[in-house]
Length: 371
Image (cartoon, rainbow, N blue to C red):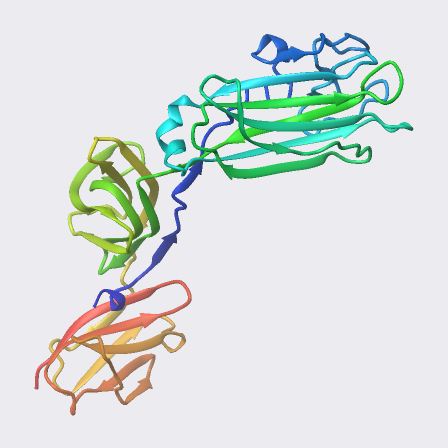
């Protein structure tokens, strides 16, 4: 019967796969000299020139192109020798997932070079390295790049090889012309997916005779102890309503619902949270619920021969009647003086539901037929 008792539906889909923060420090050289933020120079130091200092240049000046993002990017300066800058990222904290073959990393970064002939070249290598940090277990290589017109986007997603404990980001500037190596790098990122314990397919608030019906579906659950439902009058201060037991660990869909009949406010807010067996809590979106004013009248009650429905713009509404099994019942009806009169003389005794539907809402009223 729940699908019949609907006034208004607010539907949200929550993606339960998030992404970690960028593991690369100073990823666009916006935070000052990269060598002061964990990056290490290989094959000699950067040569300061123009407004650049320490593997960094300000964009849009002296022929330097605009940054892909922000106002700076990586640049090794005025030297005719090849240069390399690298950053080692410690991923020991993910060792269990890595050695289980299930830890993926996504790298992204942009390259560009100055327009000249022959052109200098830019190259990025991402290395997955062992615990001693002295062997490469796997790698991603952009190859030598020499695009001048636009920034070239590079990206790679892969599972880290078993045994990975460090990820090394290498920026290589290759000199082919002049007294500076005009290879540029910008907006680097290394992220991992964060699988939250519950994958929520949907979370819905339905108005059931001006009571809030909360329903939600999970696609999968991991160590899910229980859900928490809270209500608020202002969306800031929360009142505990109930706990709903979860399904632990499950790879199939599960369905939950809770009907709040205690709320007396015309507008209120509801919050759904989830708690793991270890006590960690995940809070989902806050949902707003609004009661509807009843603008239609039904009489007489109970119905013996005919039911009269009156209300504004009644002829513009869609009227549907259902029995207690959820089956639609077709009744002979006629309009008279702005009222709808329905003949129930041949309808069995019992409980029925009247839906008054328009584009904005569905109002449901319950009545009894008793001959």
